[in-house]
Picture 1: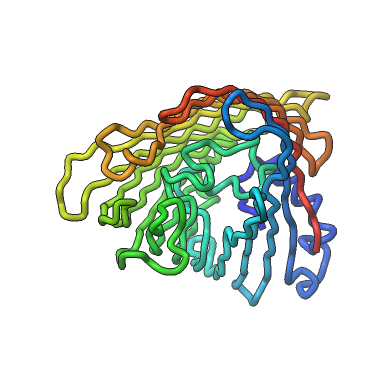
Picture 2: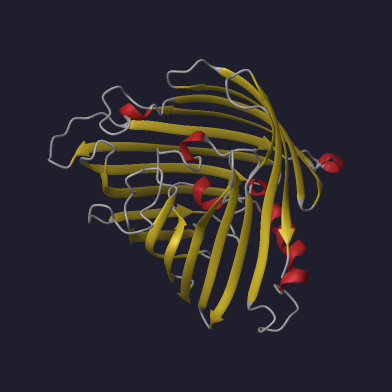
Length: 355
């Protein structure tokens, strides 16, 4: 239902909570054929910027997993997000997968692009992550990297090896005309996107993950021209019940498809540090994050999109029960061509378990 790269403590809590109702343990194969769960959050914010303050119902997310046949599984994720006049419904992920062996599994559908760490580990449902919001470079709806991918992906690994190696390779539609979206209805210009990633989780260092990712496409730029896109990403993570250190960097280059080169690339990164308090305070987790998106003036595709960003986040997460998390978060932000702003967010996020 959920990827196993989540913090071991949080994943164990979630499985234990859902299993009795959903057939993960102790039920027959027929009973366990379909499993349902979900996430939600409720927010309150104050800010000195011109953005809206007040109460906000966050994203409501539903998950369904179906065992279709031996080796075949389906996973689906849908969301409802509130707007000014209505709720927007979105199919976030829809994946059909066949597991040949641990070394080779093949999936088809709409997934979160396996670029870096956060985008493949913390999906929709803010309860899954330490902070209230995702880093700007991989925020849903942001145009820096493609957060969704429609196509075919092969993956697998050697989890029992000393270096815990696994991989993903895929081919699919490139970004749509609105480069914040995946090419759900087909590739807009007939050039397929390619991706590859390699990750290592050494057995000797619990919670450590190192990874490198690559993405290549010829996208349709906002001005209507074709542009060659290359994305290179690195991440280093130490995720334990005590310290949490997440660091990720992505470099994006664009050049005209006509062959004219020499345009500067863009860079983005974040570093997040958290610490699970020990002993009787283990339900409290303070955290902090610094992040930045840097787009040079001469960048071919990104320069007109005003993507430059600086941010500092400081917060505290409190889990009063297994399926509920409360957060208080302060954010300093500066978006391109805007004055810096200070905001405080209060959030309650939760897990919905069903069958």
